[in-house]
Length: 502
Ligand code: CS2
Image 1: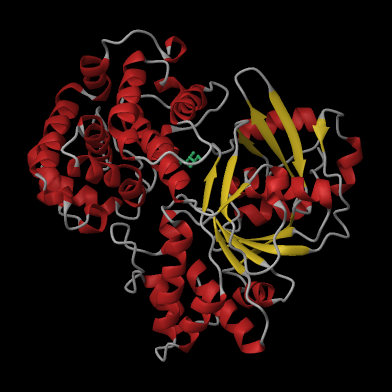
Image 2: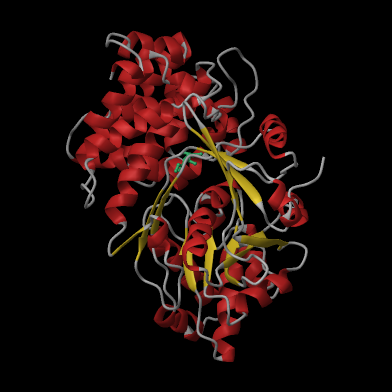
């Protein structure tokens, strides 16, 4: 079977939407670092839609920092790929033409820098996941001890990290008198633009201690914050095969996702940008309240479902939503413990927003692995759950459900499941937590004590909270004694109905 490419476009079935602009004459205006499935199902779709409506040179050159996989998928297809939108009842297909090609930074960092330094590059956007920011998750400060940051400071012409690439490219532009690009982070971090700016300035100050470079970047470069939202489960071989039946061409780079999509962008660009509002993005003055709402309600709940669900033997998120105890737990978590600390963003009704989350999580067409969401918990927990715990503690309000989620993460990251089997924990701190669990001999009290003392995750404050410590200890004991599913069913099993009954 042929590979998907421009030359098979005209042979595709009529129900597959295709780009309406001329891909050949469209130049690139965006460099995107970290071109994984999320970018392809989210920002690239908005950019594609803008070009459908208005044209413009907003093609995207993708950069993979380390892995050749995405380039191998997209380059033979001239960057073309399919987005498959799956609702409970229907599937929609759309070919995205915004991506032009993918470079592998590890192979040729100079080529990536040259591209970023080109005057026609107006925006450098990023989805490099939480750990790609090389920061201390609890403090939000750049970790100068990080091996790759140390490498980049010593070898700025051949960087490895996104931060190194940004500073090296901005430095080249400033030296040559080329106006800087806008740096657009699209990762799930609070005040993500502010955070990235802080990382970039700290790196620039360490690179050139005179302070001139960091001052110039601070004065001239904008780092808008964004809130990005779309659930994008990892693509499987089976997904690719079933799409191939439909396309009569093989698409290695396809992504599958839900119908829902949201993008809130701080309207703070130094140079040109695509009119993303034409594709449904919201350009606002203040992203903070949207971001906090999304990180705490969606991602906080997602992480809770991931750890409790995985331990309960649920492979996919939608399966957890078929268990009424999980649904009533989630309801209590969101309503009683997360919502009180939120500001209502303009134009959003929190009850309706939450109702949508229940529907989205329950979408049975979306095979989203609990294991996938469980990845990198040490980097995710602070902004998803721990900040909410801090707020609730400051109000002397309940943290019961929040603590259960954190206890489930603690149980998960021991690396041993409820049947004594090894969990494939993907987390930069996996080994550290596994060793702490072994040293604590899996005793709940000792384990809570050891884990809470990891300040990179829990900060300097949380270990000192007796309320939190006790709650975690109680839940962890239950998780060891009864297992996750029975714990939830014992404590939250009383309410009626699964998600359909809401
Ligand atoms: C998920 C997110 O994997 C995870 O940690 O919680 O990727 C989530 O699906 C997205 O943020 C939804 O916008």
